[in-house]
Length: 419
Image (spheres, rainbow, N blue to C red):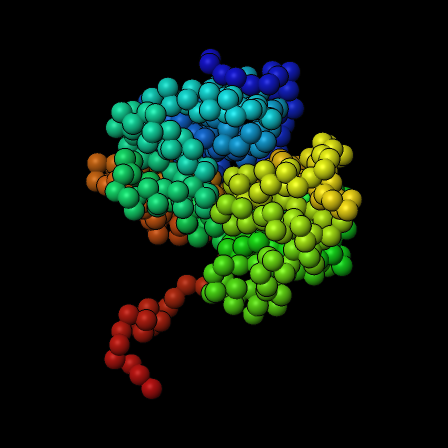
């Protein structure tokens, strides 16, 4: 089997990790059982560019159970769990191209290996695979019946492509599903980002000034979790509605230009470029910690941080680099500005990824059933899929809810009854 992984000797440990995650993914487990019987993806070549984690392993195992011939590559150089990658190849027969810490050249070589598999369906986390299909491999894009996009950054890129009229493939915006962003982005990112920061720095958050750049679902989640740990949270935003929401949620809201001189810890969660810039570094106090939990390593202007620094000490702790600015002010950059929750920790807990990957799996089945009618545009997840996932997740948690009575249904569907 074709693959490029770090070390086969890690496979046994990776198998344990995959099985541990599986026990906390009951919704995906139900889909896997059905897929094993019905084989809705039988013979379909798939390529997935995702974070290679234990949770992702259970997603690709489900797709394989459904009959898919699948290749998996990493969507981020620092998010791969090498033991999981080894286990997927050795124990589950899945082609994997992923190594923790791979350089840019290797990263793109792995992307090309996934494309050379000639997939009819793709999955992306950041749209790098789709980007190559729209540039270097345009002719091959004609084979693709549809693609799923997992993250906010990727959906932004693909909607921009759609707006130009140059989108070549139907896209299902998995990230925009409520069963994904309201839970994965908010609770998953909130918890895993704190986990990564604490593992990397051993910081006590209580009493610290924590600056949260961006108040989308990821920012909301991180801000609320940081406050729960006793931090004084400051939110920076460019969107007036989100800024107003943050203020009414009880957070201080101000421009980054002002927050830069106050913060002890800065975390970017925006999906945009250079949110923390040269002028902000110049204002930061000695010992300030800067990290990112957005998909790409562009939110922190690392190039200018290097230019400002008199000295740079790499790895003063695992995933911590020290930049010394004039007047001996030190700024600590975590995980090279990449996703701190996946680089320095293990990413989102399996329980929340259960819903995200159930959504991914059912979206794949939907594409295979409906590809002949899908146009080259970005689609939302069908509401019926969302409803099934939410109900199944509740049932797995032992939670029951009310149902409408016939009288209530009639009332909600009518206009005649008034005061």
